[in-house]
Length: 167
Image (cartoon, rainbow, N blue to C red; front, top):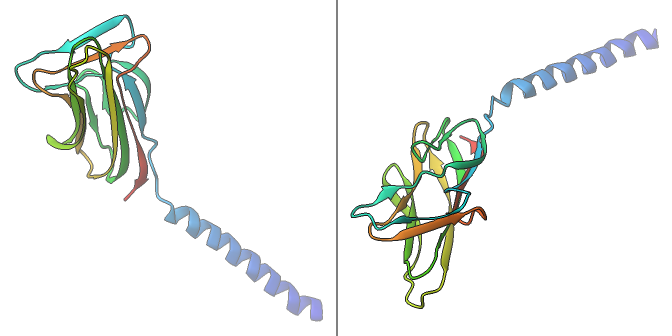
């Protein structure tokens, strides 16, 4: 009789554990995988710049684009979900060119990297930011008017980002 009284308690514990695991699975909602990294050209040696107005840079040599949130044809990253994202970029200019770029969210400047080259040597810069984005928000890298950026097979000018966590 002791065994019969004890067995239902064990079964109840197992059943509760199964329900708890089920609840845990339901509470961890779908988190999309979002990550991209790209180089401006990634081949040869090419300088872009000297424009009268700011331009959106189109990083065309894509290393990875999980979730397809980055569009290399437009240079835009579009947030697929509300969440906290990490973005980083590097920029390079050679010769006597000055370099200036910034990370933009929905057209607003967030962080920048620039170097006005007066020594006729190569210059570079980098920056990064963690941003809270709403679904549909757009992030890109803008090249300042009148300034330049260089890229080569060494992929020295890059743009990367990924979802840290969904909100």
